[in-house]
Length: 303
Image (cartoon, rainbow, N blue to C red; front, side):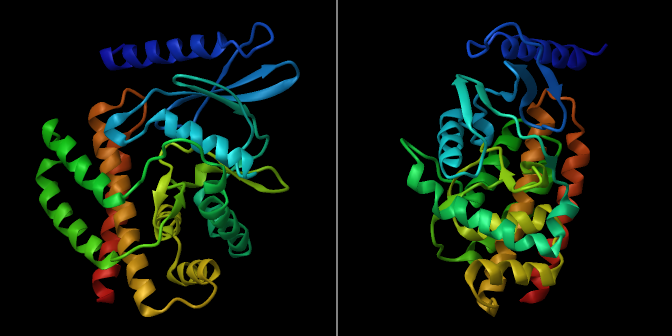
């Protein structure tokens, strides 16, 4: 077994032991590892006839992930009826009710009949959650994140460094195109896997990157991560803003959609260097870089 594999196995075993030993359990438990996470280690735990979701993850400063912020967002999301109930927390640990439902894939979020429900959920994040937030809360500005990732990659002598100047030049142009913004509270990571359908409603989970932001970021992030066709993006904007999008809104949306894809790309570039999880980040980087290039080509053509 390689050193990396040994380190990953030790990390997983430590997380398993931590999940099993939490003070919230009524007796001995046997956590079951859950697959699919690419940042944290997750488990399902049965206790007292109930099932719980356990997330193990420390602060990740290079990604702007600070658990006090995630915890505040998770509490607000519970109170707003957006996420399952938060049962227990301690440094590096969150326990919530387990949602017995289907985790979405990108195709599920491209179902036209579901779009209205998804938009209504996003609006509740933006406008209902701030009523329940307590204490200090972060802001998430995608262009700052991109610049900070570039600095990290240079410090780490990443093999991606030769690509950075071009990507940053294009990010600067995109930021100018976005212009002035409204400010709402955003989820900021609308991957399909963060939506769970229990057959009656859709839940939204995973508040690692939550923070105040432009509403356009969540809309563009949703579209970019789930490969929305152009007509569905127009419908998305129309449903959110209450009318057909004009040329200016379409261009600003296109700019921040590019930035969303670029941020996911550079997140993965950093993970290539820093992550110990068993996940093919090189492939994930290449997939997201191709998504960014397609989005940027469409943006440039629209000029």
